[in-house]
Length: 180
Image (spheres, rainbow, N blue to C red):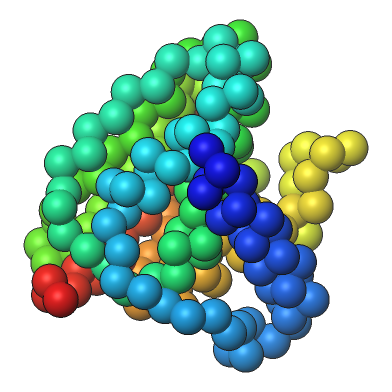
């Protein structure tokens, strides 16, 4: 847990730096590493455990890929923590958050699926826009926009599928790299 705390202090510093550089995403800097997404998911669940328990959300994981990807560990953590917390907030009466890491045609796919209220179509088309938020007093509207930029910069994609009343699934796809 001390290692995770230390990692998160670094992650917070990186988030602040990225917010300051948001206007010029092509200038984002940071070392990219070859990492296991399944390991990062495990770390993120430890980091968000208190919010998960407080919300009465149950977690289901399917960590079925042993492939690795090239992305900064802290950046992938930032993306996953954001998606996990958004999923928790979408289930105010509790529910199930399912996280899958799987092989997908030479890529690694990471799905974060909630059983929440879903996203209306008019909101869905704007959720990746900078500063767009539905959390008036709480959100900055940067979480999903920055997450999408980080994933795209690593050569991947971040998308969403949602139906009101049926929950949402956020889909990250990152290119797999040969084992080093």
